[in-house]
Length: 369
Image 1 (cartoon, helix red, strand yellow):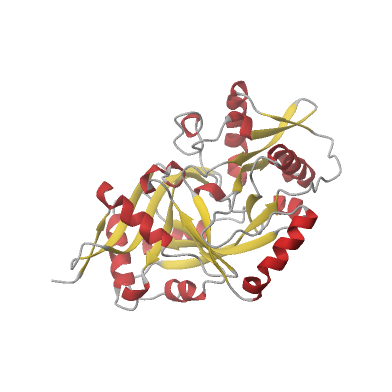
Image 2 (image 1 turned 60 degrees about the vertical axis):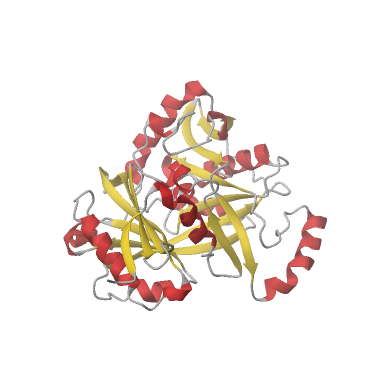
């Protein structure tokens, strides 16, 4: 009997799953652990409409040595709504790497894929995580094909002094409960202009939200031009169920952090937290603007940042694909940028659909990755 088995997680594995995430920080100048406290299964944002968590279990002691998540939700593909998968939280603890467990995990995933719920998946890998890129994208036997689909750029905007840009001729205000039907209409109408834009419904919002947990209507900022709703952007507080915690600093930043923090204190910029402390950040959700007007996008960013400045938050995280026209709204803003590679992942049965994809800018909801 093999020492390791691959199977679906159960509620009894919840604490172990959180341990695995904490033990697998991302590489880079600032190594960050993406935690799901206090309950891994209590994060509806990553669940999609269907979710399965795969674990690699050590038969010797019952502990979990690796994990991964398969989730599926309805998205726009070439302007048509169809189910799209997402592969996330892939972790394999260092002591068991190189033992063929990666291939076994994907073999089990392929068995799950046979349910026909989706033809292909999306996945992201940090651009500087060369070990993961090499392991997953070399067309190794048993693994699906990872087709590079451009880069996803996360900009970390400090909520220090205002970076307000010139007025764009739009009026910005927070949404109220009565605005939510209009918000949904804009999302449904604008979504097909982006590849993989989720099909959001009323159940994704509100006190019992299926996706946007803890996102209040007043956290969504609306842009109007001549009384016409032309854009929206939300400042989403996820701290109650998701945390980004600094694990360690590397390279010059490790030695220079005290000097940077002294300079930040003088200039009104957020300080870099100590290892083990969270990055107090909000997520810019639902960046949708009519006609992709960067001035409207900039005005929405200004409104969201001004409204949340001085409330205990240090950063606003904005995620956009490199081909997204709205990325132009961030070009003049000071902020650290983190780049991940986006991949379309498929077995042979999904290759024809992958080839069918057109050039619309891909959309990923940063707060649900």
